[in-house]
Length: 107
Length: 121
Image 1 (cartoon, rainbow over the protein chains, first blue to last red):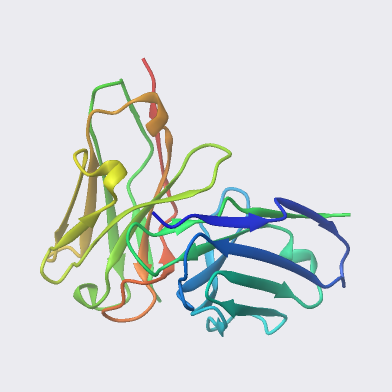
Image 2 (cartoon, rainbow over the protein chains, first blue to last red):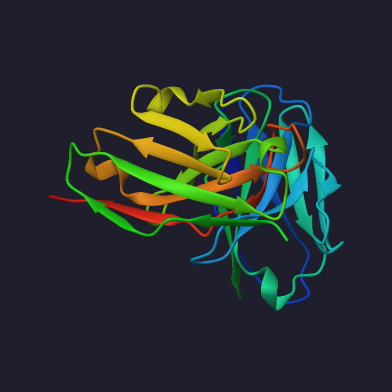
């Protein structure tokens, strides 16, 4: 199975800050990766797919980059509604696997 | 609009089985793969497998290979996930999630609201 390792596991930031979350794959997954946002008690929401494609309706402050084994989700200017947990997911091969999550907290 | 409506919370004893439903609406049911993803309390996401609602073909993660059965009923646009031989570690919220585009197996766009399954003696 492909292992997905996210860092950091948590980050404290303020409204307006720029933050980046990294996801490393245990093998080359090209750009077969997605990013999800999950708020407490809610289902995850697809933000980015194909490493850098913004899902319809997702604000442009979210962006994704990377290929191969190293990927980044960036939020250019944190908004109050962005405080949540973020997960990466590889779609290169079954079984699909997720990173362990990064919790973005208010500083 | 796309809606995935899951069945309600369940409580089971160890060794029992549970069957969860996910009723789809707002799109052509047979055009999109459906996945099942679970999340144990306070933990991350775990992909369980997928079903092609068109032909009924399934693929299950090895972790669940012998315990999970995914089926669909095209007449009601509903997919089902049955998990057998339940153990306490199966206590989790179970989500159905639709593929992000027709015939794509890759990513999960619309999600159900989740079904909490509690396994306890």
